[in-house]
Structure formats: C-alpha cells, structure tokens
Image (cartoon, rainbow, N blue to C red; front, side, top):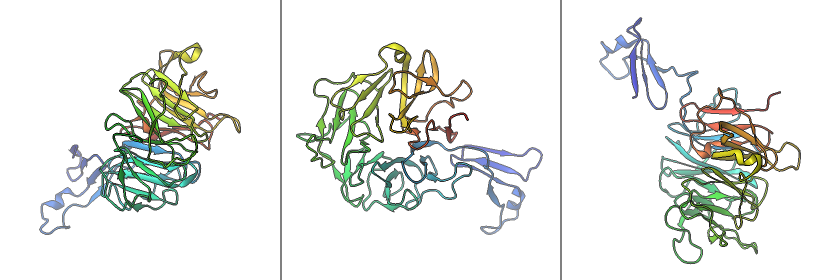
Length: 366
C-alpha cells in the first residue's frame, strides 16, 4: 500500500493505492457491524483513466498484433486494439511482473517471455494469444531472446534451450565457444539468420556472436567477432539487430552510435561528423518500417541532438536526423532501452514504455 485517504465530504468513501491499481469502497461503515468474512465493505477498482503501468519490455513483430508488452505488477499484454485496454493479461503463467519478451524474426508467431512467477518463463506459438510455461524453472526476472527460426531460446543469465523451454543448459564460461562469466549484456537474436545471437561486454568493448561464416551455427557456440580491435569501453550498450537484414546491427554507447553490417566483425561510428555528429547522449535506438518499399528501415533514437533532448528519426541510415517529439511530449524518455521500439509495418510509428505512465506511441501527422 502506497497511499490511503478518506473523502472529506463522505466518510464512507475510502481509497487506497498499490503498485498495481487504486481500490475504493463507498460503504466503509459496513465494517463496523461485520462479523463474518465477506459481510464488510464492498471494494472496487477505481483506476479507470489513471495510468500506472511501468513498462519493462515491448516488441512489435512483423505479423499479428502490432504490439506486446511486459509490465510491472500486471505481467504483460497483447495489444490488439490501441483504443481500449486489453481484456486479459498474459496467462499460463500469470506473472506478477513481466521482464523479458521476444519474437522469432522469420516465424513471428513464435514468442518467448520471462517474469517473476514460476517457472519464470513461457513460449507462444500463436503470436501471444496463448502461452505454454517452461518445462523447468529458470532464474526469476530474466531477459529473453529467441532465434530467427524459433529453435533456440537464450536467457540473460546465459542459459539456452533447444527444446522450446522444456530444458535449459548453461553456456560455457571458459574455453572455445564460451561467453565471459560476467559483464555481458542481455543476449539479442538476429531476426533473419537462424541460430545467430549477439552479446556485448561493455567493460571491454568485446562483441560476441554465435555466427559462423560457413552457415553451421548451432545457436550456442560463441565467437569474439571484433578481433581486429574492441569497441570503446562503456557503461552502456544497446544492441539492435535490424529486423529485415541478417548481420545488420546497431549499438549505442552513451554519446556514440555504431553500425555493423557483418555480424559485428567491424563497426563504423555514425555520429562522428557532419550533421550526424550533433547527435549525442544516445540512450536507445529502434528500427521500423521504411519510408519507401525496399528502402532501409527507418531509425529512431531517444537522445540529444544539437543540445535538444527528444525522439529523433532518420531515413538515411543515420546520416541526418529530425525531431519527431516536442518539449511537451518527451514523456521523460523510455523506462529502459528495451521499451523503445518502432513498428516494422507502419512507417513513422514509434512505441515507448514509461515508468508509471504506461505506453505512449506516435504516428506521422496526417
């Protein structure tokens, strides 16, 4: 309980707030004569129109619902109609808090989610309409990724599954094919090439992938990709595999924005000169539908451009940027980098999750 108040004009009207919602009764005095359970005041939810959701993850797949969410306290939702609240939270299991969410790039009805309720994860084969819990319990409150074809699930504690969540295996932390035991980011899936995942170690600037040039990826054997030299060490590192191109990755590092087109082997800093150099303090990045058919996806960032903070869009691979928010509509920025996603089917649409203000989305002015 975070707050409690009695209506000064009506002592029968009491309200109290929790992290999930706002409860109220209009017959508080019924408690005076209550002798058995259920005979006291009647309580109801009075939070309609009051947004309290803290958003911890968002995805916008290429088929099915345009948006699915992982949320604090109420698990997560499949958003079929933005004009109304979803009729039901994700179930089987019902998670108190949803923490991870991903979709298979070449089989978008396959999804994975994680949360804080045993067995702490589930898979879906119908775009999030129904879910099947993991066959074994994993650690609580992880992030999750699923490979492009849907055959491999990776968790942010470096466990992976080859059987749709029935069992999980720990990734080796030493020797050939291993990942470092500490300091590695959440694992991200390439959306086009099967069984390819990415991970970034911010403290060293090392970028890892399960990619193999000869196409023999197994989805869990790792290689240091940027062997020619590490990226600058940084406390930040948001990895964005472009949904429509194999091996095409964007990575943010505080004030820097990097791009790779060869599965992370080489990187080019984008905001280093020209007008792109005015882009600083890059918090997160998203890729959405292109302006013209067959063109490169539209990029969005939340950051600072020419000293102004906001949401910016680029239709030329980051060479130039234009602001699409304004001073009255920055909404405090995304709650975390995973709550800033663009729609791959609607040009110009961006979704942003906030910490307590729900989900906001923007469309092109018409």
